[in-house]
Image (cartoon, rainbow, N blue to C red):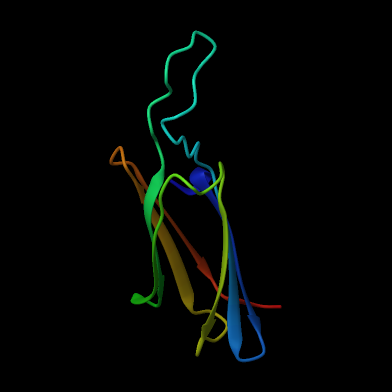
Length: 105
């Protein structure tokens, strides 16, 4: 599901800077629709990242994260051409994964 994320991984010195924009409604379960009915909670619970298949990040999220979340992180020890993958899982069982090769900044 590559349309759920936009991602960039650039080598800057000894670190790879990874930037991820995720398309997700991130509903808290406290907001009401136009008819006064509560919109059910729908949010990303877990975000993981790997570098060449090895885990480098695990983040547990909740309803406090805004719609279409943006995540940036740095990883040491990568080189141009290495593969970075980011996966999210939400509270409704949906998941999305995006992978990208590291490029030079």
